Image (tube, rainbow, N blue to C red; front, side):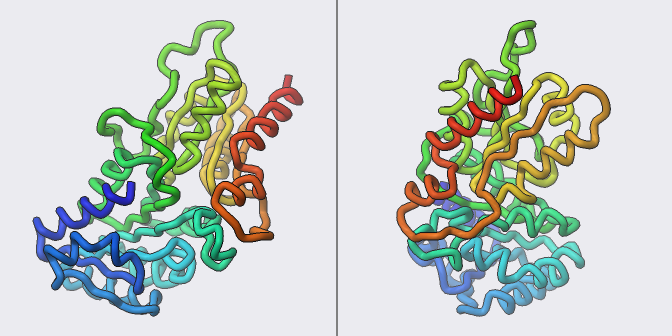
Length: 313
């Protein structure tokens, strides 16, 4: 996934001299190809992320096409005010990349983990939020972002959880993408539960759906906008929508789904939001360890879902 991102920005810069990459003193190996071919379009703003977003806004107003890269704990969390006022308020076409989203920077502690980036951005107008799960979804996200039509945030989490899609995505922005079943599962006696997941949790959702029976899975590469009609259809087709994300349970994908389903009248699914509970990491360690600490490893999720579905029976 990181390679797909690196290739996309390098190709964009080679094709258009107005494409500029700004970094807050991060990502050097990731940008080797970019700097090799377009060194004059690479700007290291140093450890001054708020200033970096202001610079990007000024460049966008001057007709340039800025891509702002940082760790997700800094972009967007440290620079939220600048994203809101400098970029989104003025509707400037700036692309924000938040790398290492979730708890993948597990050994560096809570200061370098980002389980709130979706939540803090969802309420900002004019900003698209994308959360790819593999290289093909990253290609899809970058194709949208590099059109430079509006502000975009791309959430890049754990990049080596495995391939999900076999072919390129052609779905409209905002659509949920079926990755397991979902097409012909409406017959009587079919599955009562469907899984929705984003980012690193799509792979987990597929494993869990298989273990729990023949359950369909949708990947959600676009958090905002999200296809409300599609969500409504799923909420009326299934009894339970299980939403998985490497993000706080508050305000993320699960919150967006619950809000959409809550607005529906009549019979609708129960939304089971599974993610990081409203707490910081207590200990440091490997990514796998922190998944277990927060209860979002496959075994913990399986036990939680089985309990929730049993209680619903």
